[in-house]
Figure 1 (cartoon, chains in turn orange, red, cyan):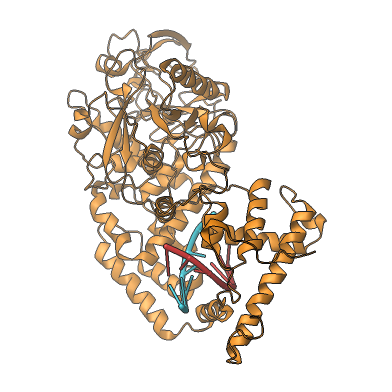
Figure 2 (figure 1 turned 45 degrees about the vertical axis):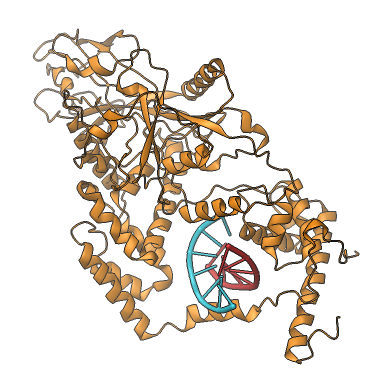
Amino acid sequence: MVVRKRLDYGSRGHQVPAMPRVPSSARGKRSARRKKDEMSPFDLLATVAGTLLVDHENSSNAPGINAAAALTYARKRKSVKAEKCDDVPPLKSMAVENCIAGSGGVCASPRQPNICLAENSSTRNECGSSRSLEATNQVQVQRPLDGDTTALYSLVSSVDLDGRPPALVSSDSSSGVPLCIHDKDRNTSHLCHAEARHAADRDDDENSSGCTHPCTAGNNKSYMPQYAGNSRIRKMFASKIRKAARNKMCGEMSNKGSKLNLCGKKISTTRQRVQRAMFKRQKPVRRHFTPSSAKGILTEASGASFSVEGQNPLCGSEDYNVKLRIKSFTIPELFIEIPENATVGSLKRTVMDVVTSIIESGLRVGVLLQGKSIQDDNKTLRQARICHGENLENIDFTLECEAGQNSSPGVRIPEEMDFHGADAMKPLAMVKCEEPFSEAKAGYNSQQRVQASPHRVQSEHGSVHSLFETTAHEASASSQAIVPVASPSSEALAIVPVCKSKRPAIGQRRIRRPFSLPEVEALVEAVEQLGTGRWRDVKMLAFDNTDHRTYVDLKDKWKTLVHTASISPQQRRGEPVPQGLLDRVLAAQAYWSQQQQQVISGKASGQGCSSSC
DNA sequence: ATTAGGG
DNA sequence: CCCTAAT
């Protein structure tokens, strides 16, 4: 293979340095060595002390870190990440919980997982009245009570969570507290309460080792600083969260329909920052993987949930027939991304498509009693303790995804969206992230949302980022944008707050985006010209317009390409890369590494680059 | 902000 | 892809 020699570097006038920057191989190695071998007793002490300090300072808000954990960190510093569980704020774990359609699926969340099952609406009143957007449907339900005469009327005790805003977003940039809207006129507050409890319960159910602190919700502000104060901990925390999220989203959900609540997708702020920065310094585009025009308006449909509106006073009766009426049934929350120039008609169609996809994916109703999901469908109501005399303060109904994840075509997770891709113009449903329920519990000022004007439509160019930011769990910040969503009867459900968070969300792994062949080709070509070690230039040369490929990504990709090229074809995985390309990779790698060697040797001998110049 | 490397 | 040390 002939390695392409220095060529004309085009407009940029790049000169391939005869002496490429010395890749101080020693640099990395040194650091690595240090990391592993130089941990001194001081490190341990410092670690412990620091951890304890942090713990102490935030003990009231973040019960997560404890002395034991600190010790653990100290002992296994290298695996601190794994230990971070304790630091996982309930908020994080919650967010994770609510994803329904795993990756690629739609995460809808019945923010108000309550259905108002009303028995002739005689007893119930407020519950559905406010939010019912859809037609009222009468449903006859037979409820065999296991031969027991226990009445079902207690079902009513369920929740009236309607007051809850579809999106728990704080509009106050100063507070990182997710809000639960309290509707003054309706006692929606308990909704938050109930959900917070659910969170806790779920935590327990899932053995989230020690990560059960849903109650810290009451004080987000105080709890956030904890992470801000210690970047290391924060990162570990983020990492932990990410992993938990990943596991939950992909694992849990596929098996048993998970709650249709929200999908906790967070975004790596750091990355965002980086990418944004790169965006700024964009230079003339050389490649065209990404049409830069595909920006769109992000719209969020309202979440769905219902409340049991009625109850069946069958107590003591032998009549097992229960007449229930679901007064309100809306689809779960979802995000839709659609070009600004799309027509209203297309918007409607898009919404319809998304809704359809959700429905087609299969939905089923889940029942939560005391925050715990009742999985066994064969249980009688009595066995499930859904009967008179039991603690029925909170029975929630949720929409659960019947099918596995990928069941919602065209729906993607926000982070994953490639706005530049060929399909960029296709409207996509997006996952909406919500704040942890537990957070909702904390009293917050509902006014914020109420004040929001229902006709604001976010359409600025930064919408993409905004959306991402919105989905970030850290939704602490921000301004909200309210997007009107088709809502016949107006009222709250129609208003979806979109939060724009300035603060980067911590820890959200980017979605995997395998390099396409054209991208690989572009990379190879660029490296052939520029060499290894000049990733920023490579980025500018071949991926300047591709936001999601950072120079680090390119470097990593090159690394994998080199590796791929050096192993047998049988061992290769993923989309096969043409051997020809791989050959070029090896050739370029060999050439440039040689160049670097020369530079190094030149330096070492103090000869400058005489040998190669 | 970049680069190099380990994970 | 992520995380980090060293530049």
